[in-house]
Length: 163
Ligand code: GDP
Ligand code: MG
Image (cartoon, rainbow, N blue to C red; front, side, top):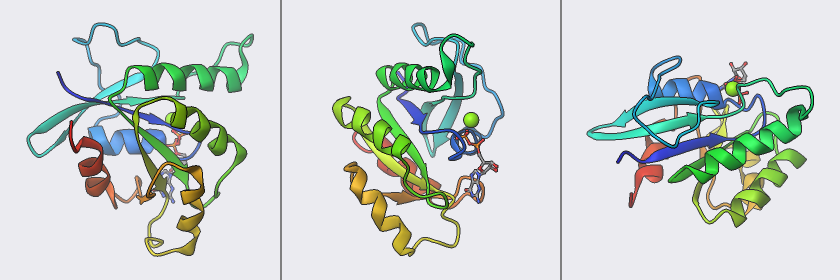
């Protein structure tokens, strides 16, 4: 069974850009995974000889009765439940937000391995701005640039370690 990596985070931090980077596809279909629900994007990824499934969240319109906040929370919960590893994506350029703190609180209780990716960090690998992400209590932040392909390999190696 391939490990499942879920990408969670508030809107606009770069989850879908990271998904495309990890899967090298726009919208892969994963037909063979019974039990994975259909309202999220699944893609196949590979690091060397290791194959994995990536789950993107947040790319779907909420219906008018649930609203965006509830819908995000629902998708995050479901994606986390079916994941082996969670990649929590944040954005160094907009900084930490209350929404990040809420998601972090949920993830700390979720009893899953969580990696903290700090995206949009191109040219900022040494930035003191990264330090504040420690406050989320999810370990060492991994600076990445989904758009420019930086830090991705090291994030993936950490994500797939021990799986
Ligand atoms: P999502 O809502 O979390 O799925 O975020 P998207 O992947 O749709 O990206 C939101 C915005 O951030 C888009 O304008 C992306 O081009 C931009 N973005 C994503 N990754 C990076 C990055 O590594 N660096 C920069 N500077 N912008 C990025
Ligand atoms: Mg998206």
